[in-house]
Image (cartoon, rainbow over all chains, first blue to last red):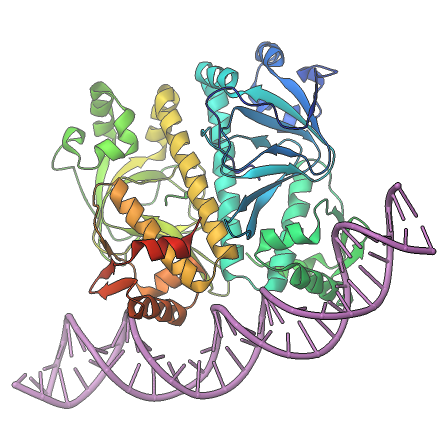
Length: 248
Length: 248
DNA sequence: CGCGCCTTTGATGATCATCAACACCAGTGG
DNA sequence: CCACTGGTGTTGATGATCATCAAAGGCGCG
């Protein structure tokens, strides 16, 4: 989920991040085939390579914060980020999680509407808004690709609205697990074991529940042998039952 | 809210709709300045005019249904549409409402992910997907405009997720009324009286509540002199109080 | 070992859903 | 003219789901 906004001027460097040139070029980039870059020709990739900057975050670090000017866009290369919004009184809604291959800054807006925080070690490819805008201006097929991704985001957002508005706690958890499995599958990592890089509180804030309810629903599904809770994730034992719970 | 998908091949004509050539050209179109068409030059407008078709719906008629191939895109000229998604067991989530100036089919996808139904008499401008795609292909600035709108939709969708996941019933209703007022304001119709073309059930399905709760919250706000319920809508009496309830 | 953090589990309670009845209005036909 | 009907909205009584409050269990790490 890359629900994001974008920037106008150059950006204050992300507060606490190490930077480095990519150790290898875009041509060998692990996520190129599934990222926006997949629509670029080799020549265009060379162009892009001169603009991009590798940027690494450690667990808990903030890539950008809600309300900041959006001075850059990012490709996620490795790791997971939490995209969240805060209400003034501290209530939090997690809009989604960004996985490798996702693009942050799709909406090309000027102010961040969400914060992005690393859930573990994260590697990204950073482009200044100015540079990226020029590129988009010059390459309509890149814009087209961005727009297709935006359409996909919109669909995910709708799915999430349906979930938040009309599903029970158990259905929410089931749908979340299946959705995550599907996203992993599309990026190659297909498995009955679904890794959960986020904590229970993050899941709760994503599903509109409390941490206690998430925990209870997971143990309920576990006790019913629908899933099996394992360190760092869950194993989907009875996918059919999960799909029945999550029924679209 | 135009969260929508799009079409590939030509579309089966909307079930029960009268069709007619626009009685007057795009140049005089009431919503042109606020629609996607605002980015087109007079020459391009002429081009567009040969492609568009006026399409009128009566209250309750369906413009398109969830799961159908998306054979056309639409500009809403007049009236209000409800955009909704159904769960197999009948639970419904209203993703949003399309107002004059809104564009349906932003996402340029092949299958409709939501249904669009007229809440009253509606006039639209219809373009076959095929034609519109060709136009978008040829005019990058049109694509850019669509993308900007998509970004705006994404922001609205996020706002709605926050509302659905983390707000109380009273806050939901307050935020909904303010949001509607703001949308009316942007399209010119600014007023302290907010028209509510949708029924209570539609509001409930939009806010993740039941019809009874919506009704109760409205009367509660009315009794507290925060709003005044009037035929066909509400008058916002204490906007400050509403904003405090809706606090972003 | 012991401290901090996250998660789980239990007891209680509030919000909102459900069930039920009634009011209101428009349209229809006696 | 008015009773009748169906649709929509309001109000009240009751109840279920999920939040809140509280405490203990597990785990990594200094």
